[in-house]
Image (cartoon, rainbow, N blue to C red):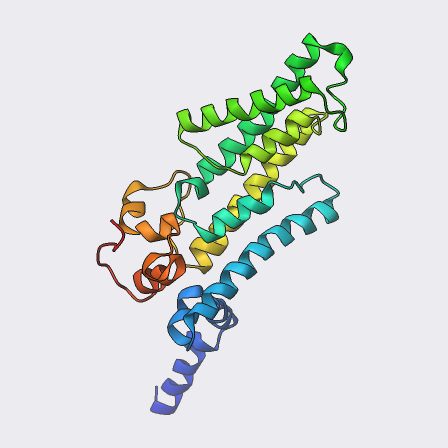
Amino acid sequence: MNRSNMNKANVRISPQGTVLFRTVAFFSRLRLGYLVRRGENPKVAITLFVITTATAALGIITATAYLAKLPLLYPPLAPSAFILFYTPLAAAASPRSVVLSHAMGAMLGVLSLMAANLLWPQSELLNPIVMNGQKILVIGVSIAALAAFMILLRCVHPPAAATALIAALGYFTSPFQILWLIAAVLLLVLEAFVFIRILGGIPYPLWKHDQAVMKTHRALSQGVEAHGGFWEEAISRIYRGDSGTSVNK
């Protein structure tokens, strides 16, 4: 084979010209690490990333609920999304904490309401718009029980208290609504994994938070404002390769 034919062969097998290569290259430039390293103002890239991903995550759930005609929209998802995308390495943002706490909040709220309805059948406790002493007791018991279980099981996720409140008020009228809530929470966690771990390059856990990772990236897990704050710490540690110990001890 002469040199001309060899050059033509090299051109034919070069991966740079393939659709797959161009597709991968395009999405790699959307990763947060790439934007931070190549941009002149990394804080702008960080801010846009957090706002865009959190909004996109809730937008996907909204679109799914609308197109599939499924009850996937619940108010507690919004504060959960904020915690997941602002402090992704925190224990409260781990999939275990998010899923278990919301599931427990829904079930404890419903169980408290059903038990109270058996004790006071004439109080109309199953009506969400009714508020009386018995309903206040149900709300208090359900939230207190949720707090106790979250602490005991070490899966504290504050937005789950709103889930317990909704359930205690009587807005869950069938077990399927609880299942759809859990499905929406699972979808939110899956989106967090894709956006934070794959696009963001941050070691978001698969299930339970990693104590070693939290210790190494203390500011990333606590969201503290000292020494530049949460995402500024991410810039220096993850995207610029700073492997030193955390300044927040």
